[in-house]
Amino acid sequence: MVQSLPKTRNTTDHQQLKTYKSAPSSKLSSDLKKSLEESQAQYLRTTQSLLARKPNAAALHQHLVFLRKSRDSYHNQSNRIKSDEEKKQSINAVISSIDEAISSVSRYMVAQLASLGIEGGAAYAYGPREGVNYAIHTAGRDHFQLALPLVQGRLVRQMGDLLCKSSRDFWGLRITDDPHRVTCWACLKWMLKILEAQEKTADD
Ligand SMILES: [Zn+2]
Image 1 (cartoon, rainbow, N blue to C red):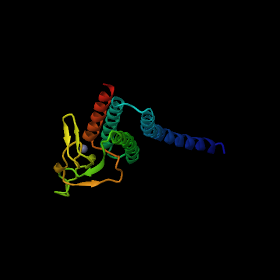
Image 2: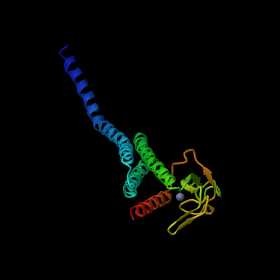
Image 3: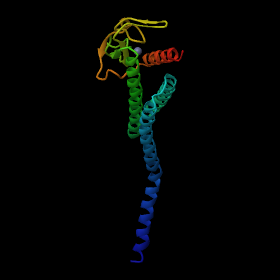
Image 4: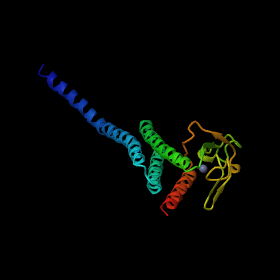
């Protein structure tokens, strides 16, 4: 009995040691997970509260640049992860929520453009090399396709053109499941430019 007591304590100490050994890393990963989950919610929350304040084009521009930079940074982090699948998934979930936030801004801008008489919607274009060789996958994008011709300053587009480029330059276009979700950065920038120009005209 007297002998078994220290033995039990030893076992307990040993188990504790084992627990301590693994504790810091699992603690870190749960903290990291929590902070990633918070970021995930925060990107959506700040975007919703911005859009609720009916922001001008400059504020939209600033927010889109912020979202894009954040996305790039998480994307690079995710690419660097080789073995920690759980961490990679948590980071990818943040990326998805940033994409959702960008979509919200895009929907808001499509509605703004429509209210100015600039009608159009998202159209998916394959990357230039995709389709020619199926072994090469270049990511396609959702562009803003004009339903009517547009002349805006030096920007001249025909009906059916994309804001970023003439549709002739793309291999294929198809309608997307969300007509208001534009993910092409060049198209988003054109949308901002048009809104900015309209605000200036309204101020004069
Ligand atoms: Zn585009």
